[in-house]
Length: 443
Image (tube, rainbow, N blue to C red; front, side):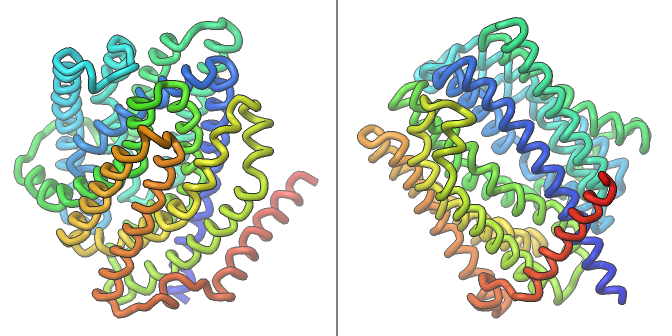
């Protein structure tokens, strides 16, 4: 009875998180459509590249502190007040240092930021401390399994973002410069929501504990490095397309690249819910990971089939005929996105056991291969080569994850990749139950 309750709790949290991510995705797509329709491929490409640089800085600079916060909060290995204080000072210091480093590179090596106005980039990066605070304080809520609060904050911030974009582009008819400023303000809002909640609930804690910092780095640095390598596979190609082929083709490819967000919402929803849970599990954690890997893979595969059938129609209707060149790279990315969804879920097992160095090394090897392939083929084949390079890389990453998971747990291909009829039926029954309840409420 207790196990059934636990399973229901996990599934309810996954369902709520998935629903929230779908709403966020809808809001993000709406923003992307408005930007594409008003600013065209070049304007969309510029915004995508600037945002991508900011996200790369977050991936490089976070040092795994966010993941450690989830780990430490969920298993109560560190006092919450110490995590809050360290999160505040870490975000401020790391954000300031990262801004200065990018500033130096922007003026000393301008070729690195080719086709990107420095003023636009630097305005956006002024919000870096808030970007880190958003990550660190949201991870505190994740560790506490406060998924409803967290998802409400994410939806609120994205809804505010959409309203601003509508006013700036459709009502006031302003240009891309003002959107960059607006995105900077949205980063600040996104941080203030979870920060204010934590400070109001738990008090203003500004102590900085070096021992806690050491613990967080000992745990998080390997995860941070793996996250950097994994992120580079999906995002460095956008940078290289812009570098070698210009902003317009980067705009086309940014649509293909961001389309992966649709595939990531289910694995992300599973990951964010199960990681705090499996930290407390013993021998059963491997079965939990295998189960959610199967479920994720099944639904992502269904999404891929739907994409193949309808993507051309969707792109044409939403973004316009000018963006139809994005269709081919999207389709070429599909096998890689499917592979990534399974690798991401399997990766939570290794996070729960301290993240062995071999996983970080495997991501490094995959990232190096991806960069080499991009350098060789993007100058000649453009975004098609970028998409194929990412697909090859993610399939290889899944092979590494499965191999190590199999060695650690003894669970084979059938256990990890083949969904069970009862599991799928349970999910569809739950969806049907939610829909029937909503229809009754409307009637």
